[in-house]
Image (cartoon, rainbow, N blue to C red; front, top):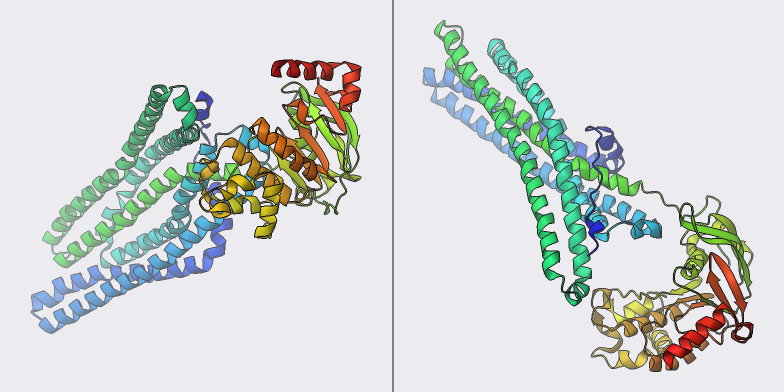
Length: 592
């Protein structure tokens, strides 16, 4: 397998920046109503829970010393009521936030997917599909809780902290100051650990992305792996990637697990100081046991929201890299897109004109240079020439899968850069050498070219391209299920299904890029009649490996050195005895 598949993503070296969360507000604001309600319910529940230490203080200092059973029962009843209220409000809040979290996942994932659908071919040509997949699925799942519960919990824990401080100072000011003395120590600790955590979790994100990309590639290429007996080598590579995931994960966990013990240690020391200070004061008769117990309880609660904020901060550190990767994907520029003033391309007859077209995939390496030609409606054009000469590039440019460097392409006099992509591509039928089959039924795959097609139309198109015989022979005929990428079909059967799909769409311009390369000669001869019928009345561009299949085309263009070297009918080019003549005769000799 290609080793560049698991090339590292670049580390995002920017410090933790709240701008990423502010940018995420576009997803949060749609659910601000339910989130505010959840926050309100949580605040009430939290306040209700904070009354408990004051009730305990009153019981220890008044009801129990006085032996007042009635007062003690009333205090216990109020304790239970406030406890139940906090449970009820927190439960309702939890259900609200579960719905919000799932809605945020739905919205972000749809936005990422829609953007991916609009990205140009270059994006997919230069990135492992596994790394794209992990961003849409894993990363979105990870950040959704941060954007919903995470932000709510930050506000809630801050409110809890404020409430605790208020209640604590109401009970006793001096002991409350002892509790507050531990805050500077905590701030120093958190500042030290935050940067280490973020870098560690970025490494985890990168290693998981690499592992996922390599795994996806090996699943797709399982047959090639076995053909070349690469099982051991691939297992060794995978073991290495998996080991890196494990080591980076363990290192990240080491930093994350330091947060809770650190806060807990500070909490224990502070509570010990409360008892020591409280006992000294208590011994002087300045405070009571109930006050010491109440302050100790509040101190425990004081550190709880701080610990929760630490955990939330951990979660933010863990997921901010994922959020950055998601935004990185969404920010990927859509280079081929509708112009602001783009208009709908009307129904076309199929004339095509290249007007001084130049194009390069990489800057400084032109594939086509100053190419000009005109094709009349209904003409069939064959493109031949050496591999990499630009044949497939020409047909890709007609469909505007790439933007031109120079020049323009006109269809029926309309510059294709000024019409909408949908109106252009919906009038074109493109058959590629790699015939992609979706999971589902054969009928669904053929109907993909025309969603409102009837079963009779599907059968008619299949018969015309010689696909009906093998489809009808399958257990469930046209309703037979095919697996992902048509794994249970031969390559030739996939191409025949693709032919039927393309024909059903009834395109005005037809592109056949090595479309019969996986079909045997006998089937191709039978298919040729269907192809002739398919091409009749349509402007057709044909790229074929077997030159015998394109001798009847109206024009044959020999592409090389970035342009059209020869152009004419088969007879004209054979009489010319140029490059096409040599290529054709060489192929005939090979067959003989």
